[in-house]
Image (cartoon, rainbow, N blue to C red; front, side):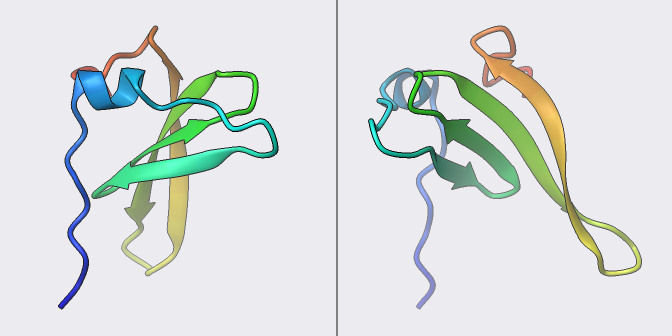
Length: 70
């Protein structure tokens, strides 16, 4: 059975703490947030094009772009 990802909430996004050694990502379906060691958080969206190619589209930085806007 596939593992179900937890849905994002504003509280869960605020609670993502930076790691000192590297950046990491959390995903909710195609919406991805990357957390950098500096504490910066950046939204991207993963899409599959009609030709089958997968790509990521940058959305913006959190909290300038909040969960509802993303």
